[in-house]
Length: 432
Image 1 (cartoon, one colour):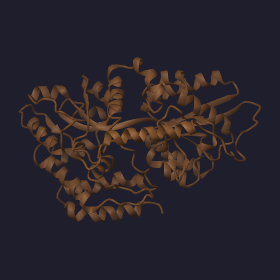
Image 2 (cartoon, helix red, strand yellow; image 1 turned 45 degrees about the horizontal axis):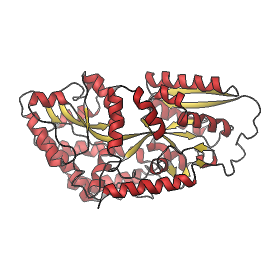
Image 3 (cartoon, helix red, strand yellow; image 1 turned 30 degrees about the horizontal axis):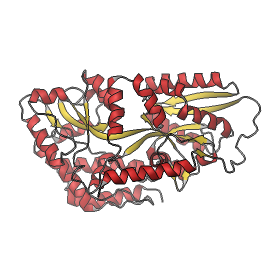
Image 4 (spheres, rainbow, N blue to C red; image 1 turned 90 degrees about the vertical axis):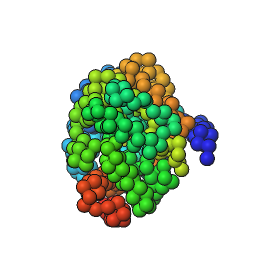
């Protein structure tokens, strides 16, 4: 199949759809629409993140409040784990924030509960967002999440480690998974003390492996459909990486998986390659003290279907119980389309999904953030649409996959014996 032609055709079709409905227009906003609000209103806006995100987001809120005296946005934020515990409690108590920063793993979970408003009921200008990217926030035809930005899973390469090992940078337009292993082995055997490749086994890695092998983890209805033989090949590849010496020993694989970014081997200049998102380039480069390089995924040239896609970094959602839909609409349009907001946020929430905003902020970025955007644009002809949105309960996939992978790495089971139990356990975790 000619994927470049297919991708361009998809973009043309998306553009045609977008041209017919550049604005998501209201069609009966319900009793809590906030229509006709005459006085000042207060809306709550929640997000997770570190100090840099908190400071940037608060600056955006302050600017919005100054420009919109009849709307007061009040921020609520926390770290990742505490955020979801708090949100679950708030939703159960009918006290959810009006605007919610939402992760892909939880969009369907909250959408299926009726906790999120269909954003098609609001007048949101989404003309700058590609059609496939916009649809990534849909659940059963309702737009319950407005994508903030996109990220691309890729390989982070450490040029200094490669140079010291005397190993050239690979041609990432052609390399296979066998090449990845063989190049990594050369680095590990170079005598420099560095390890060649990281061993990544997140659900993200499994999505990509499945697609490259003509398979899927979930179907459009949210059922687990991955074939046992796909799982077997995924785990055997991991076994080969560690057994060959290209990757670290099993104990180090598990240790690295829980390490903070600054303590990962590639950030400490102890590893040549590792999987990650292009939007992490700046953080990894800062930690390592040099500019790392972004490479395409191995196996794309040989794949039955390219594994790469634009992943929504996160979404904006609106509580279905908000009493101030018009105010929420105004703030969402500001977050999505305001140049002033974009100049503050830059790539804090991913490479902006709004391509016009993306182009406008690029000259203001540092070298690594620019490289992240350039990488996003460079694979546009080759990425495929995002996988179906994670089904309710699918947030357990990472924990389940990690457990089975650990058992395989330490020879407590085999890929063949683990495949069907993994499928059964993941299927059981999904909320019917």
